[in-house]
Image 1 (cartoon, rainbow, N blue to C red):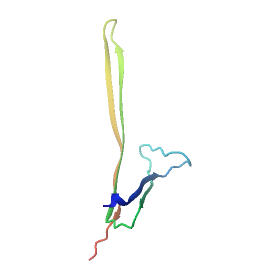
Image 2 (cartoon, rainbow, N blue to C red; image 1 turned 45 degrees about the vertical axis):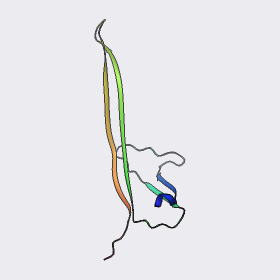
Image 3 (cartoon, one colour; image 1 turned 30 degrees about the horizontal axis):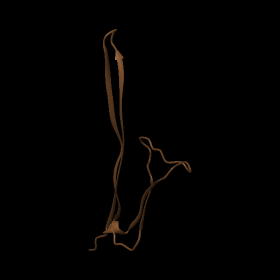
Image 4 (cartoon, rainbow, N blue to C red; image 1 turned 180 degrees about the horizontal axis):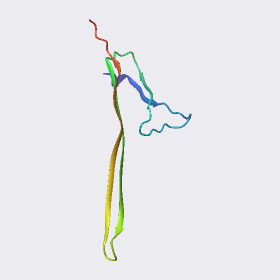
Length: 95
């Protein structure tokens, strides 16, 4: 199995600023490279990448509706920024 021979598997994102981790926002182009290092020669038929990026937020606000009435309002949301599948390596079928 390939995992027995896997020494390194990294996804390295391109960053516009040197020595700074990349930060992406909605609508930004995400680019980079996949680094695979094996301990021995290995036959690979395909390599697929599925990348997801999303944000979740939850907060509460306490409010008063008079001298003896108080309540807490809950808010939450989730936004999907990225959901992409890419075939990085695919075995060529012989005819």
